[in-house]
Length: 550
Image (cartoon, rainbow, N blue to C red; front, side, top):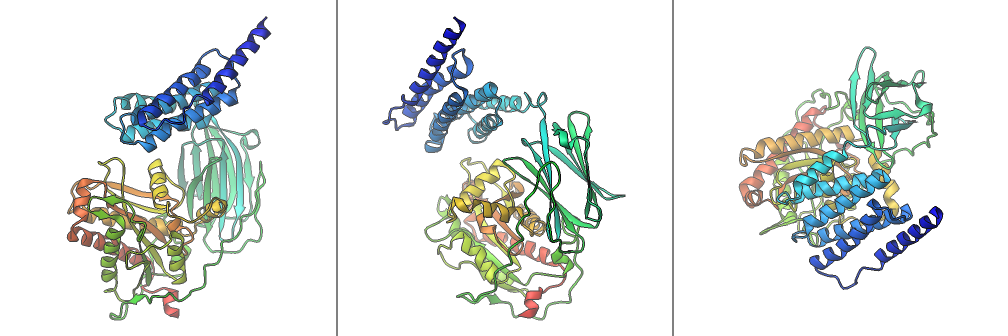
């Protein structure tokens, strides 16, 4: 009898799941109609998630995601509709219910993302308080009872770097610390347990710059990974996803070639391809402008970069003599639009002002990716900088948001996005890219092997600080949105330090009014000029090897 009842229940569940798929009328067009249809499907799928009706879990999970997607589509199609915040709440709470049912991290992540979307974009909604409470609640349950797992430690030997990759089964928070006597790099991974092969493991590599990797356990479900360092000039840390990985690049104090890549337990590692050589210089249709002022001053010693070390550029005494300025967008791509102003026109104006300031400096050459309102593909802008043997690449953009109160300055360097907001900006700025999906592996590799990361980060910090401190004199309410990381196509493949500056929000009424004035645009140009000169002074000398050859 019990078996028969279960069979009947399963058939009922299947029938209900099939009914969900066929119950969507094709003619629903308005926000109200779409919301009503999605809500009906939402009620039915919640019965399967929270009730006693038996149905195959994969079908229920798939239908839940389809309903969530239909709510998201309403928000994207009708962002100013009165149904938008309700649709986000329904989508988030359904993802939340799926997480409670199936305990899948992707359901939890989607619920949190949708709740945050609601809080950020619809702050006046009556649902914001409940959404904030759910974000807090989702951060706590199940995590304490079920720690993440450190599943693998991988080691890759590159020509001047040793890469250590800590692989986990989901994203975790961590603390890093570098200490001396002897030199060690410590990572405390919160809420983590080691896989059995890594339990209290000690991995030894005599004579290498990362001579030992030790895995230990600490209270409160914390795993400590310690790297013993020898002759490491600098290191960088970044994260990758799917699966979540913490990647540490340790650079040799004196670069030396190592022929092979070595993998360590518990998994094998495939050697990564060497970095491609930069393209050979080629002549541009237009000739770069050059300063003909007095001879440059004598070179001075380099200062340590932001990581506390001396990059290979600083070790070789390289400086900055040729700068490529990239005014974003142009032609049929006007960028973001404000009332009476578009991004492409604004940033070209600022770029031309910056060029005039730079050309007053001895020994500097300036190349602009465009001088008129013409469209240049994103990929060609970086290629141009490489062909011109540029020493620095500065891309100038303006920001925008659906939230009219969003404002301020932010500067980016190339890496993987550091926040949902950075993801959104990258998606907008990369929308004109001509790259296809099959190129994704090469793009990921180019970002992960970005050997200008520390120098680009230093330049980004100087640009950000200079813009904020200078513009605050004219705009007391300016917001410092910080230096961020994102995978901008226009920065991928650049053979020199490169950053992208978002100089203000054209979607903010106050900042838009300032951006329309010549005085404010001049101040932006002067701020960028100051940052370039500060970065130039931080390097050794006033000319690069390329400039000496020319």
